[in-house]
Image (tube, rainbow, N blue to C red; front, side, top):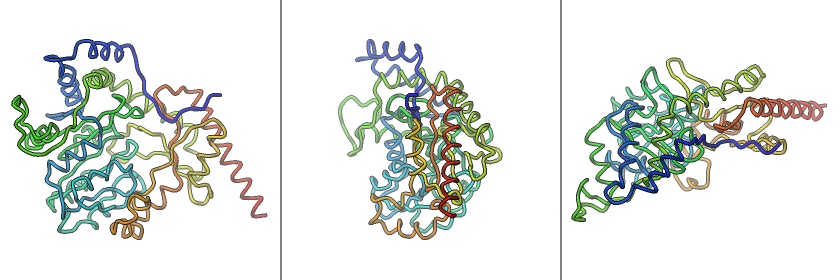
Amino acid sequence: MEPIPVAGPWITQREIDYVTDAVSTCWYGEANKYHAEFEAAFAKYIGVRHAVSLPSCTSAIHLSLAAVGAGPGDEVIVPDVTWIASAAPISYVGATPVFADIDRRSWCLSPESFEECITERTKAVIVVDLYGSMPEIHRIWDIAARHGIAVIEDAAEAFGSKVGERMAGSLGDTGVFSFHGSKTMTTGEGGMLVTDRDDLFERVCFLRDHGRVPGDVSFFNREVAFKYKMSSMQAALGLAQVERAEELVGRKREIFGWYQDALAGIPGVSLNATLPGTTNSYWMSTIVLDESLGLRKEELGRLLAERGVDTRPFFHPLSSIPAYEECDEAEKARLRNVASYRLSPCGVNLPCGLSLTHSQASFVCDQVQAVLAESAGSSQRDAA
């Protein structure tokens, strides 16, 4: 069997037709036609007033931080376990990242750790909806409100997730999304910033176009700012994908259901959790092994790769990676973030690309169980 990839998109004739039209017609006066349609459709789906299409989720976080005024002397709290793109923009604006622990159940920001990390310098918190899971956002809201802290919801991995009836991305002062080729909906590369706040929307639109007031044609820049725009071809692809949102999210949930049916009863194996009152879109179907099994993510990934199964390791704690080894806050995090350092070494993302078939998922589950059985047998022989 050909190796089963861990991620991948679902492209139909609709996407091909829209992109073909964009590359053929979206020039000069029509250059922004698909941007406007995509942003309107995306805002409607998420249930917010404003959406701004961008080249990446990283740029959306950068603009969010700049718009709320984060800068040198400020601290921004971010969960320790996430992709570096959630944290890197903190450095872009000159602020200091503070790495909080994650919750053992949701794998998202722990409200208790968030509150413990707050100082008089805390300007914002970036709440990451890890792998599609949702945090205890109401508790995080309450804490942030008491301390006057801006909330940026990183929903890059949670398109289609919910808290109650509110969509992921609509739960902060801003929400940000990724449309990387591995995501549930894609524009190849790309991102979106959403908000209900008029002031933040206006500031973001100004900052993303070299500090020009929207509509300015005199090239009279008022600040040194950024160039963060999406191409018309990407916007056309995004429009087609968001029109198929329920189909795409439904497939992700179906894939997770296959894994849950086959693996949920295995001792020492945990899958993505869903907190009460939330809906998980399961961008990644993930397993975390109990430490007692003695199998770390690197070894599990290697053994599955030998059997034709591609995986991704659970994100490393940011406080553990070389990029932050000189950061004083990383040293503090390594001492306090127990859940981050317990979960990260033992988790892998299983194949869950949108083209995955039930038979392929069954094959993956068979290989996972075989590797666990072999590992258990080897441990027993070593003990003997």
